[in-house]
Length: 164
Image (spheres, rainbow, N blue to C red):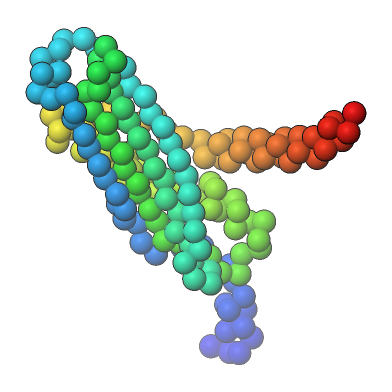
């Protein structure tokens, strides 16, 4: 390998999943076994959260958390929460692309594992699995960016409005 090739490889962008793991899993059945005798169709609520942190230079952890609550007549049938994480290496990536990767590509990579783990936990608890829908992380990222921009613009207008 010649020196120019080595230098070129050293500056090539790198984006790679180093490890994918289930960081946290919790299942509660607070009203069992009585509620298991109910024949009513449960209502299911799903909440999602995304977080990230830098672990080292060029290495980040991205976590996708889902909380699924199933209720029958306001009584909890089950509550399951899982946090799936991935450790990603990002080197020689422009800063504007790092945000996109952390907000779209990273969660898109770990989310299928979270879906499978939660469906498995619910099944092992004795319930029919809840299959989480696919998520368009790009649309979610863009909506969050628009919301942040609107809040920033709103905060800029607030001091002027208070002067009146």
